Length: 63
Length: 540
Ligand SMILES: Cc1cc2nc3c(=O)[nH]c(=O)nc-3n(C[C@H](O)[C@H](O)[C@H](O)COP(=O)(O)OP(=O)(O)OC[C@H]3O[C@@H](n4cnc5c(N)ncnc54)[C@H](O)[C@@H]3O)c2cc1C
Image (cartoon, rainbow over the protein chains, first blue to last red):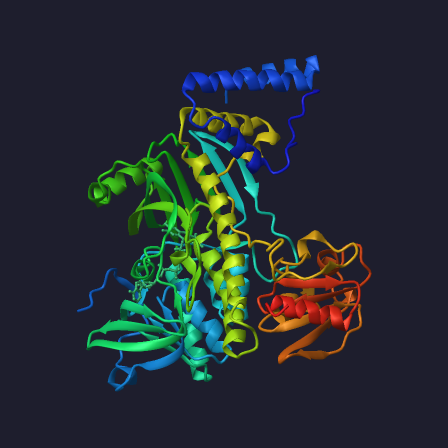
């Protein structure tokens, strides 16, 4: 697998708090739109088509 | 009249008439502690063991029933050990390391606290709060017998205070009527709803969380539940939006259901309704209910912990959510921090402004605790649809992928903070020294011979030398510093070297009376040590 599924973010609680804070005060639709923009930004940063395909596959599997 | 606001678990300080009640003029005491909860009693122990006369006033005659705190952290045990009160806690407490996290009907993952070797105390013990408090009071009794000037006065309710520049006057109600005393210093340890804060008109601001939690402590004759912390998000048995199960001594279990904001407290606390939740969670299990309660919480602190001659500690100064066990544990660190500072000021060995560093350091600690407990609360009880979707996405992913597990937050468990960048810290001049023992850090324990390092530290300023030379004693304006001389070879496991030397061949540490690092160097230099000592006592 090319996708890294091991912990890779330093100070994960800080990141998570920022992520939730970014949505503060938004309507559900605006939040969904923010998420879409966020995914596109991150996908572009990753670039690696194979890793992105793997991520799409994993994300389609619900818990 | 003076009525009990809660039932007692242990009646330990029945009302006795004090000679102060018959004095013609209000008697002046160096230190009065308002509130005999864990933090007030620990404060009295710290000061009393230094030989400082201290009076504790509590409006009850003992320890309240209902366990409230159950998780006591390593640092609290280390502090209690410095007071000589930890052995009984450790004997009675339940040690646990494994936690399991569930979502709905699936186990998401499990974690092990993986306690580091070479410490006298485990990462946590579970112990009902009344036991923790009783062991502190037992130690007070023993210390009194050895001459420690501690006076605990039950059924002494403080009704009003008058603050002056150099003392505080307290008006007290007892079963025999009112009387008045004065204190050079008043320590407010009167709990989260602190009447003292109210009497002084002081702020207590922060965030209110709109959720209620139902606690049930139960006794089960069932050994199938292991000694682990089990946490459910959105459990399939539907007894709460989240649920926690945790083992306590005496065959008791703590169960904590998140039940929402708009509830009828009285209705929810009816035994049949509590049993409905418990039965859904524990089908076929027989149990007795020991204690139930509903709590809500806030994350907030006072803007200032010191107001002239009045100093606040424990829940009176700051309040956090219970997730992470940071309430009593952080209060114990307040006591640890305040005791030596007040001692030096009372002995005239440090200026009063040393007490401002109590606020600086412990408000910093409170902010760290509030941040952590707020984040846990936001994860456990998401406040918006989007936050809820993210939370459940993390739980879904955590079941299969390691990366998501560090994001699961069912409480970041209490660890003491490092006073980074604060004004008492001296030089960090140990080349290659480990980050965990930088100035401001609480000293980590380590094995030394057949004993432990922390047993040799605390209660006064000390020079800890490891394979380094230094004088055995020095004196700076009346403050004595004694040396603890060790060698890396005292600990064949290498823990001492890893925690205190890092890449350095030798080290000299100046350690504060509360076992925090004040400064550290490659080698002993008299004037550098004096500078650091002056700084650490606010004389610099
Ligand atoms: C459900 C729950 C679970 C918790 N779990 C944990 C945990 O696992 N770990 C942890 O560390 N903490 C935990 N806590 C927090 C912990 O219980 C508190 O932080 C701790 O009790 C604070 O101690 P204290 O001495 O500051 O205040 P308190 O224990 O509230 O004591 C205050 C004392 O002051 C007295 N008093 C009040 N007014 C007056 C007056 N006018 N005159 C004289 N006396 C007065 C009171 O009677 C009382 O004895 C939990 C709390 C709750 C509610």
